Length: 160
Image (cartoon, rainbow, N blue to C red):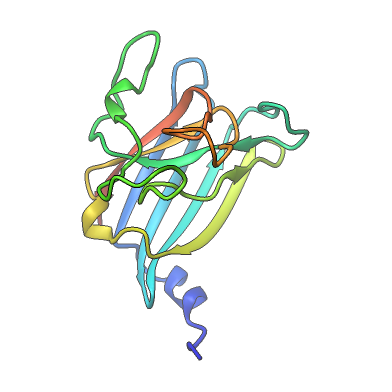
């Protein structure tokens, strides 16, 4: 049985982080994603505010949340984060088994907070990649990326 140490890890300094900012249309979105080395994988802590209070078909807003392969939160007027690339998927697996597929963010009056443990990637693999928040929930079925709507916020993962 593993020793319960994850809360202690969260009290320390992360190994990597991404400052999240919304597109011009979603300029109120701000947040920070922190990545910690942990026994058994990477502990990810996400805190985001300014999220839309309605998203897709669900009564409680749910947002797709992924690591993308690109290294820039740049793009065009039609797709402000086009250069963030597609889901991080070095093993070429179908969705939702990409290394960059993460649990959805559940909005609560424009705010989301989540912590989870994953073994899908290591911290050194994701440095320089992007984290994307999508406008709708990921359906975990549609290929190649879960039909989670437009990219509404982005951050580049940086080492601490």
